[in-house]
Image (cartoon, rainbow, N blue to C red; front, side, top):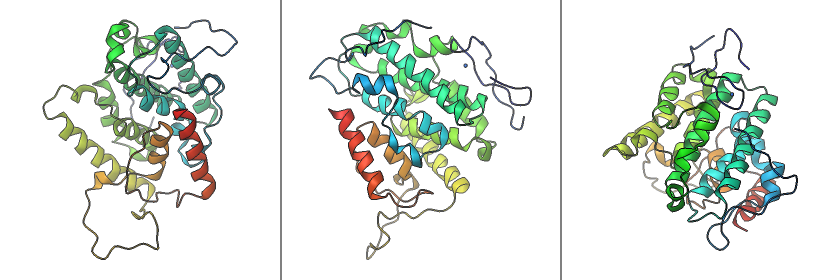
Length: 293
Protein backbone atom coordinates (compact mmCIF):
# COMPACT_ATOMS: atom_id res chain seq x y z
CA UNK A 1 0.00 0.00 0.00
CA UNK A 2 2.91 2.31 0.57
CA UNK A 3 5.49 3.75 -1.72
CA UNK A 4 9.15 4.63 -1.33
CA UNK A 5 8.60 8.29 -0.55
CA UNK A 6 5.65 7.95 1.80
CA UNK A 7 6.25 5.29 4.42
CA UNK A 8 3.47 3.55 6.21
CA UNK A 9 3.06 4.23 9.90
CA UNK A 10 1.88 0.81 10.91
CA UNK A 11 0.86 -2.51 9.43
CA UNK A 12 -1.13 -5.53 10.53
CA UNK A 13 -3.36 -8.41 9.70
CA UNK A 14 -5.40 -6.43 7.24
CA UNK A 15 -2.60 -6.51 4.73
CA UNK A 16 -0.09 -8.80 6.33
CA UNK A 17 2.59 -6.15 6.83
CA UNK A 18 4.31 -5.79 10.17
CA UNK A 19 5.77 -2.32 9.65
CA UNK A 20 5.91 -0.13 12.74
CA UNK A 21 7.33 3.13 11.43
CA UNK A 22 6.54 6.68 12.40
CA UNK A 23 6.24 8.79 9.24
CA UNK A 24 8.88 11.17 8.02
CA UNK A 25 7.16 14.35 6.75
CA UNK A 26 7.50 14.82 2.98
CA UNK A 27 8.30 11.79 1.86
CA UNK A 28 -2.62 -2.36 6.66
CA UNK A 29 -7.70 -11.94 11.45
CA UNK A 30 -10.15 -12.93 9.38
CA UNK A 31 -13.35 -14.80 10.10
CA UNK A 32 -16.12 -16.17 7.92
CA UNK A 33 -19.51 -14.52 8.09
CA UNK A 34 -22.88 -15.70 6.91
CA UNK A 35 -24.27 -14.02 3.81
CA UNK A 36 -27.44 -13.40 5.81
CA UNK A 37 -27.38 -10.40 8.17
CA UNK A 38 -26.82 -11.81 11.68
CA UNK A 39 -28.94 -10.72 14.64
CA UNK A 40 -27.58 -7.83 16.62
CA UNK A 41 -24.85 -8.70 19.10
CA UNK A 42 -26.19 -6.30 21.69
CA UNK A 43 -28.65 -7.47 24.29
CA UNK A 44 -32.20 -6.15 23.73
CA UNK A 45 -33.41 -3.34 25.97
CA UNK A 46 -29.85 -2.86 27.20
CA UNK A 47 -28.30 -0.52 24.66
CA UNK A 48 -29.13 0.50 21.10
CA UNK A 49 -27.16 -0.84 18.18
CA UNK A 50 -27.00 -0.24 14.44
CA UNK A 51 -29.43 -2.52 12.63
CA UNK A 52 -27.75 -5.47 10.85
CA UNK A 53 -28.49 -3.99 7.44
CA UNK A 54 -26.54 -0.87 8.30
CA UNK A 55 -23.63 -2.89 9.66
CA UNK A 56 -23.39 -5.02 6.54
CA UNK A 57 -24.15 -2.59 3.77
CA UNK A 58 -22.21 0.48 4.79
CA UNK A 59 -25.03 2.56 3.32
CA UNK A 60 -27.12 5.37 4.70
CA UNK A 61 -24.49 7.64 6.24
CA UNK A 62 -25.30 10.57 4.00
CA UNK A 63 -23.77 13.08 6.39
CA UNK A 64 -20.44 12.19 4.76
CA UNK A 65 -20.89 15.02 2.28
CA UNK A 66 -19.48 17.60 4.68
CA UNK A 67 -16.66 15.54 6.17
CA UNK A 68 -13.09 15.24 5.03
CA UNK A 69 -12.50 12.03 3.01
CA UNK A 70 -10.83 10.16 5.87
CA UNK A 71 -13.45 11.01 8.48
CA UNK A 72 -16.24 10.35 5.99
CA UNK A 73 -14.85 6.87 5.37
CA UNK A 74 -14.69 6.27 9.13
CA UNK A 75 -18.20 7.56 9.87
CA UNK A 76 -19.58 4.08 10.64
CA UNK A 77 -16.77 3.41 13.10
CA UNK A 78 -17.16 6.85 14.66
CA UNK A 79 -20.86 6.16 15.20
CA UNK A 80 -20.03 2.75 16.67
CA UNK A 81 -17.40 4.28 18.95
CA UNK A 82 -19.98 6.49 20.61
CA UNK A 83 -22.50 3.66 20.77
CA UNK A 84 -20.16 1.12 22.36
CA UNK A 85 -19.42 3.39 25.30
CA UNK A 86 -23.06 3.19 26.33
CA UNK A 87 -23.51 -0.58 26.15
CA UNK A 88 -23.80 -2.60 29.35
CA UNK A 89 -24.01 -6.08 27.85
CA UNK A 90 -23.61 -7.94 24.57
CA UNK A 91 -25.20 -11.21 23.58
CA UNK A 92 -22.48 -12.38 21.21
CA UNK A 93 -19.06 -10.72 21.61
CA UNK A 94 -17.49 -12.83 18.87
CA UNK A 95 -20.14 -11.77 16.40
CA UNK A 96 -19.69 -8.14 17.41
CA UNK A 97 -15.95 -8.47 16.91
CA UNK A 98 -16.40 -9.85 13.40
CA UNK A 99 -18.82 -7.07 12.53
CA UNK A 100 -16.36 -4.42 13.69
CA UNK A 101 -13.53 -6.08 11.76
CA UNK A 102 -15.70 -5.93 8.65
CA UNK A 103 -16.36 -2.25 9.23
CA UNK A 104 -12.66 -1.53 9.64
CA UNK A 105 -11.87 -3.27 6.36
CA UNK A 106 -14.67 -1.37 4.68
CA UNK A 107 -13.19 1.86 6.05
CA UNK A 108 -9.80 1.03 4.55
CA UNK A 109 -11.29 0.23 1.17
CA UNK A 110 -13.40 3.37 1.06
CA UNK A 111 -10.60 5.65 2.20
CA UNK A 112 -8.26 4.22 -0.44
CA UNK A 113 -10.92 4.69 -3.10
CA UNK A 114 -11.14 8.35 -2.10
CA UNK A 115 -7.43 8.76 -2.72
CA UNK A 116 -6.31 8.95 0.91
CA UNK A 117 -2.60 8.17 1.21
CA UNK A 118 -1.80 4.65 2.40
CA UNK A 119 0.22 5.79 5.40
CA UNK A 120 -2.67 7.97 6.54
CA UNK A 121 -5.15 5.10 6.14
CA UNK A 122 -2.98 2.75 8.20
CA UNK A 123 -2.40 5.34 10.91
CA UNK A 124 -6.11 6.14 11.03
CA UNK A 125 -6.82 2.41 11.35
CA UNK A 126 -4.41 2.26 14.28
CA UNK A 127 -6.13 5.19 15.98
CA UNK A 128 -9.62 3.76 15.40
CA UNK A 129 -8.63 0.31 16.66
CA UNK A 130 -7.13 1.86 19.79
CA UNK A 131 -10.20 4.00 20.45
CA UNK A 132 -12.66 1.15 19.85
CA UNK A 133 -10.68 -1.26 22.04
CA UNK A 134 -10.54 1.29 24.85
CA UNK A 135 -14.27 1.99 24.59
CA UNK A 136 -15.08 -1.73 24.78
CA UNK A 137 -12.69 -2.51 27.62
CA UNK A 138 -14.19 0.36 29.63
CA UNK A 139 -17.64 -1.26 29.50
CA UNK A 140 -18.94 -3.64 32.17
CA UNK A 141 -18.83 -6.52 29.69
CA UNK A 142 -15.46 -5.74 28.13
CA UNK A 143 -13.41 -7.46 30.83
CA UNK A 144 -15.92 -10.28 31.27
CA UNK A 145 -15.62 -11.45 27.68
CA UNK A 146 -11.83 -11.17 27.69
CA UNK A 147 -11.64 -8.58 24.92
CA UNK A 148 -8.08 -7.70 25.94
CA UNK A 149 -6.95 -11.16 24.77
CA UNK A 150 -8.08 -10.49 21.20
CA UNK A 151 -8.20 -6.77 20.62
CA UNK A 152 -8.78 -5.07 17.30
CA UNK A 153 -5.30 -3.60 17.59
CA UNK A 154 -3.77 -7.07 17.92
CA UNK A 155 -5.79 -8.28 14.95
CA UNK A 156 -4.72 -5.53 12.59
CA UNK A 157 -1.41 -4.34 14.06
CA UNK A 158 -0.16 -7.16 16.31
CA UNK A 159 -0.05 -4.85 19.29
CA UNK A 160 -2.19 -5.03 22.42
CA UNK A 161 -2.15 -1.44 23.65
CA UNK A 162 -2.03 1.68 21.50
CA UNK A 163 -2.77 4.39 24.04
CA UNK A 164 0.71 5.83 23.90
CA UNK A 165 1.53 5.41 20.24
CA UNK A 166 -1.59 7.30 19.15
CA UNK A 167 -0.13 10.40 20.75
CA UNK A 168 3.26 9.73 19.19
CA UNK A 169 1.53 9.68 15.82
CA UNK A 170 -0.24 12.92 16.69
CA UNK A 171 3.02 14.61 17.67
CA UNK A 172 4.63 13.61 14.38
CA UNK A 173 1.80 14.71 12.11
CA UNK A 174 1.42 18.04 13.91
CA UNK A 175 4.86 18.88 12.53
CA UNK A 176 3.29 19.03 9.05
CA UNK A 177 -0.39 19.79 9.70
CA UNK A 178 -1.20 20.79 6.13
CA UNK A 179 -0.26 17.32 4.89
CA UNK A 180 -2.03 15.41 7.67
CA UNK A 181 -4.96 17.68 8.49
CA UNK A 182 -7.54 14.98 7.75
CA UNK A 183 -5.87 12.59 10.20
CA UNK A 184 -5.57 15.36 12.77
CA UNK A 185 -9.30 15.97 12.48
CA UNK A 186 -10.06 12.26 12.89
CA UNK A 187 -7.95 12.07 16.04
CA UNK A 188 -9.76 15.15 17.33
CA UNK A 189 -13.08 13.37 16.82
CA UNK A 190 -11.87 10.33 18.76
CA UNK A 191 -10.67 12.53 21.62
CA UNK A 192 -14.01 14.37 21.61
CA UNK A 193 -15.78 11.02 21.89
CA UNK A 194 -13.83 10.11 25.01
CA UNK A 195 -10.61 8.43 23.90
CA UNK A 196 -7.97 8.95 26.60
CA UNK A 197 -5.16 6.53 25.79
CA UNK A 198 -2.09 6.90 27.98
CA UNK A 199 -3.72 9.75 29.91
CA UNK A 200 -6.48 7.56 31.33
CA UNK A 201 -4.54 6.68 34.49
CA UNK A 202 -2.76 10.00 34.81
CA UNK A 203 -4.08 12.10 37.72
CA UNK A 204 -3.92 15.15 35.47
CA UNK A 205 -4.94 13.28 32.36
CA UNK A 206 -8.12 15.23 31.74
CA UNK A 207 -6.26 18.52 31.95
CA UNK A 208 -3.68 17.29 29.46
CA UNK A 209 -6.39 16.06 27.10
CA UNK A 210 -8.20 19.38 27.33
CA UNK A 211 -5.00 21.15 26.37
CA UNK A 212 -4.43 18.77 23.47
CA UNK A 213 -7.95 19.31 22.16
CA UNK A 214 -7.55 23.07 22.44
CA UNK A 215 -4.32 22.90 20.46
CA UNK A 216 -5.93 20.71 17.82
CA UNK A 217 -8.78 23.16 17.37
CA UNK A 218 -6.27 25.95 16.85
CA UNK A 219 -4.34 23.85 14.35
CA UNK A 220 -7.49 22.91 12.45
CA UNK A 221 -8.64 26.52 12.41
CA UNK A 222 -5.29 27.66 11.00
CA UNK A 223 -5.45 25.06 8.23
CA UNK A 224 -9.14 25.35 7.35
CA UNK A 225 -9.59 29.07 7.84
CA UNK A 226 -11.68 31.24 10.09
CA UNK A 227 -15.17 30.23 11.07
CA UNK A 228 -18.23 31.85 12.60
CA UNK A 229 -19.03 30.76 16.14
CA UNK A 230 -22.75 31.51 15.94
CA UNK A 231 -25.46 29.01 15.17
CA UNK A 232 -27.23 31.75 13.23
CA UNK A 233 -25.63 34.84 11.63
CA UNK A 234 -28.76 36.80 12.52
CA UNK A 235 -28.41 36.14 16.24
CA UNK A 236 -26.17 38.32 18.36
CA UNK A 237 -26.00 38.40 22.14
CA UNK A 238 -25.88 41.76 23.84
CA UNK A 239 -22.70 41.00 25.80
CA UNK A 240 -21.26 37.72 24.53
CA UNK A 241 -19.02 36.04 27.07
CA UNK A 242 -15.53 35.03 26.10
CA UNK A 243 -15.34 31.30 25.51
CA UNK A 244 -12.48 28.88 25.75
CA UNK A 245 -11.49 27.47 22.42
CA UNK A 246 -12.37 23.95 23.58
CA UNK A 247 -16.03 24.98 23.76
CA UNK A 248 -16.12 25.40 20.01
CA UNK A 249 -16.85 22.27 18.04
CA UNK A 250 -16.67 22.20 14.24
CA UNK A 251 -19.98 21.35 12.65
CA UNK A 252 -18.66 18.16 11.05
CA UNK A 253 -17.65 16.92 14.50
CA UNK A 254 -21.18 17.59 15.69
CA UNK A 255 -22.40 15.49 12.74
CA UNK A 256 -20.14 12.63 13.77
CA UNK A 257 -21.27 12.82 17.37
CA UNK A 258 -24.91 12.92 16.34
CA UNK A 259 -24.29 9.86 14.21
CA UNK A 260 -23.15 8.14 17.39
CA UNK A 261 -26.44 9.17 19.01
CA UNK A 262 -24.67 11.41 21.51
CA UNK A 263 -27.23 14.15 21.81
CA UNK A 264 -24.90 16.80 23.16
CA UNK A 265 -25.58 20.42 23.80
CA UNK A 266 -23.18 22.55 21.83
CA UNK A 267 -22.55 26.12 20.78
CA UNK A 268 -21.31 25.00 17.39
CA UNK A 269 -20.00 27.24 14.72
CA UNK A 270 -19.89 27.04 10.98
CA UNK A 271 -16.62 25.63 9.80
CA UNK A 272 -15.70 25.33 6.14
CA UNK A 273 -19.12 23.69 5.71
CA UNK A 274 -20.97 26.96 6.20
CA UNK A 275 -24.45 26.40 7.61
CA UNK A 276 -26.20 23.07 7.67
CA UNK A 277 -28.90 22.91 5.05
CA UNK A 278 -32.37 21.65 5.85
CA UNK A 279 -31.64 18.50 3.87
CA UNK A 280 -28.45 17.82 5.82
CA UNK A 281 -30.23 18.44 9.10
CA UNK A 282 -32.89 15.93 8.09
CA UNK A 283 -30.21 13.37 7.21
CA UNK A 284 -28.60 13.82 10.62
CA UNK A 285 -31.95 13.40 12.34
CA UNK A 286 -32.74 10.23 10.39
CA UNK A 287 -29.30 8.83 11.12
CA UNK A 288 -29.63 9.53 14.83
CA UNK A 289 -33.04 7.86 14.91
CA UNK A 290 -31.65 4.82 13.08
CA UNK A 291 -28.99 4.28 15.73
CA UNK A 292 -31.45 4.81 18.55
CA UNK A 293 -34.08 2.42 17.19
